[in-house]
Amino acid sequence: MTARRFVPFELFTLATRGYAPFVLNLEASLARIGLAGKLVVYALDDHVHAELLAAGMHSRRVGPDEHPEWSDYGTAGFARTMAFKYTVASEIIASGRSAWYVDSDIIFLKDPTRYLEERVAAAAPDLIMQYEDPPGRLNAGFWVALPTPRTAEFLAAVPPRLDTADFTCDQKVVNELLSAGDLLAVEELDPERFACGNQFIEGRTVEEGGMHVSRRDRPFPRDEAFILHFNFTIGLKQKLRAMQDHAAVMHPSLEALVRKRGGSALRQLVRRLSFR
Image (tube, rainbow, N blue to C red):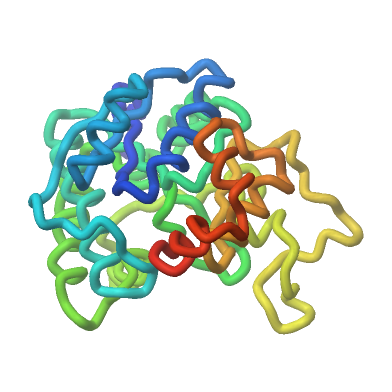
């Protein structure tokens, strides 16, 4: 087994204009655990790039000028937006660093750096990914790609498939590629320590035919969690409500959206911006 090292790494996310409050909130959560200034944001439009620079963020402008300002989950536009994270990750690992991607609708509760480094040293994976349990699939919103030849091959294979009408979600592409053969050694993260929304947000439970974990008998172990990922919500309004309910609103720009919830400006955002 070839030894692997998690560090050095680049922690990064993507942003268009509508995602800026979530990116700033993500950075605020990182600052609370001693990781302020570690996040690099790859901005997909000029406006968000300028806004994030003005806020003191590490922002890098990527993508064509005509890149759409908004794209909804499950559309070809969304898929093309998500394709950039694999292109960026390819460039990072080519420099010999690990590419640590995180969605902007995530908050950090504890610093997972040492934990991830230990997992890399113990298992020598090519890729570490958040895991949805249920339904039992890898989540493309939080992952670490190690600088290996097999990882480079995998990352290069994702964007071309997202530029077709067959795929409107990068997570579907990732799971299909990884299930097709032994391309990569993948380490699945603990679903409670690296929690997707169905672990801690109320919803139709598995027993009821849904995908949420019932917490009636065993409360979600928040004290043990490193991150909370606010997926498994439909629409911006619902996502904001869930983040507010779980004490995850940490930046004034996101607080402002919460205060406006239900107002005309927010209704426009709900119609134009959809998170998974």
